[in-house]
Amino acid sequence: AVKAMLPRFAAQLPASVQMSTLNDRSVSIREGLHDVYFTLALTVALVVLVIFLFLRSLRATLIPFVTIPVSLVGAFTVLYALGFTINTLTMFGFVLAIGIVVDNAIVVVEAVHVKMEEDHLSPFAAVKRVVEEISGAIIAITLVMTSVFVPVAFMTGPVGVLYRQFSITMASAIVISGFVALTLTPVLCAILLKNTHGQPKKKTPVSVFIDWFNRKFNKGLGAYTRFLTTIVD
Image 1: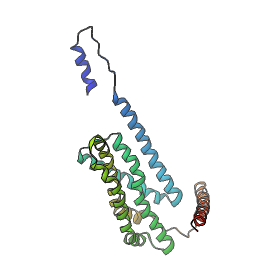
Image 2 (image 1 turned 90 degrees about the horizontal axis):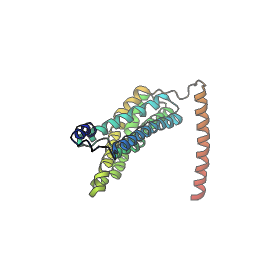
Image 3 (image 1 turned 180 degrees about the vertical axis):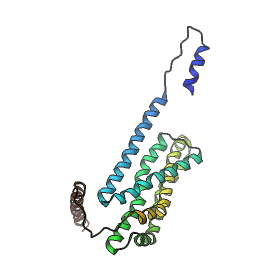
């Protein structure tokens, strides 16, 4: 809007006076936001990749992939209601929030997988049991994580003004992710997941790589566990 008004101001100046832009912060802000967008997309991709590597199921991977934007859109709604804008602080909050909001969904999906594998339950029966068992844990995780960021919103002075938007972005995204983990995620698990444990699986390059990765990971995890046991003892 300022740039659009400059020609009108220039026309009012004497012919011997020229107007030029000495400093334009909007350029650096736009470049910073583009970097944030890239980081946002990269974070989502890495989260989805990690889930796929460990759960070895496209259906299971789809569930957190759906719940992430739901939580973020809900957080955008909170920011809009409070009169905040999309800026480098709020977007930085969203980048950090992605790795946090997906935790609750992963806990639910992982628990449903374990119930189906160990107790040989259908997805719906596994979801019912998981919701009964871990609802308290989901609520506790949400409250603990929120308590880390909420106090920042009450800081005073210029620093408080800056970090208030960041803290509210994080807190709102975490609270909404907890709500989504208790509502949308169980429904998606009951609809999308299938109990394929014990059934023969097709050998594909992707499945072969995932099996190799998990064998190496479990081997490393076992060595790390033995190392910790030795230190503690």
